[in-house]
Amino acid sequence: MAQPGFERRPLVCVEDHLYHTTEMLTAIRATRPDLLAQMTICAIDRPGPDTDATVAAWLTRYPELQVIAPGATGPRTITLSDADLANAPAFARLIANALRRGGILVQDVQLSTLPFVPADRWWESIYVGSTVRGIFADRPPAVRFLSNKRGYSATFGRDLLDAGFDPRDVMDKSEMASVVVPAVAALVDRGFPKRLDALDEQGDRRHIRVSTDDGERRSIEDAFDIVLWQIGDQIDLGGRIVGSAGRARVPLKVNGHEAATWRALVADRLHGGGGIEVLAVGERVGPPDAERAELTNAAARHIHTLRSRLSTTSAIATIEHRYRLGDGISVATLTNLRGAAD
Image (tube, rainbow, N blue to C red; front, side, top):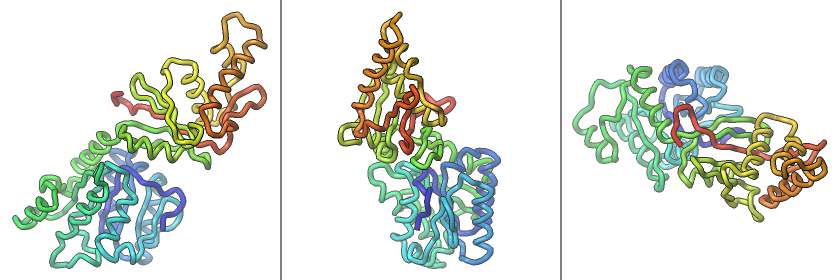
């Protein structure tokens, strides 16, 4: 069962032994620590005190990480149950439910602790990856395998090809820092090139890697009340409370007054500000050289237009001559990563 805060993420890594997982996390923190907030680790080692202690240490050492493991408890975790390991479809569903559309699944090529994989047919672990990929028919994940074996039989190579995988995509665990992490990071960077700066209903601020796929946009707009999505010269207002019935999308002029005010309101919410001054809004949208009363009226008319975009007009409050988004309103705005193109 997923605990509070657990979410689908771009990267899911599946290992059968705790020490291999620890090696991976150590390499990621040393070379690409930003990936820790984008990943979920699934460790299917056997339950017991050692597993509990190791999982607890991961969650303490890597507070951004999500973990699926036997005995995992607390926020950002799923306790791996016997039902999850009953058969290949059940385990694949568990992994798919932790993975974003178009994400990256990294798994050990031999998951020896899966009870439904015969020891003499260890390579059948690869079919977990193909089943997960099939669940996402419209935007399947990239699947990469890890191994510490020194070569493969011709039969296993054919099995990989039959399952739709390229044997060249099996990476050597001994090259974790030099090969594995850079290759996985490149897939994340390519598949999720944008960053969402978000604040949820509980007031927790997060940075989420996202793609520009329309399905991804819809899922984000279903998750937050107000979303500003800008790519190039196009900016859209979306979210759960946008539109008379919610979940609409309103195109805005990038350099227009309305877009500027939405950006100011969202930025104020993200940074825990005290709101934007009514007079400042009036000075921006009102006529030049107008008196204070006229500027206040111009600001009120302008905010009325913004409120009309929402199914809940009380989402924009006026408090002590300032406009601000109401408490509990979740927001997200799309920003470029450094070096990313629009």
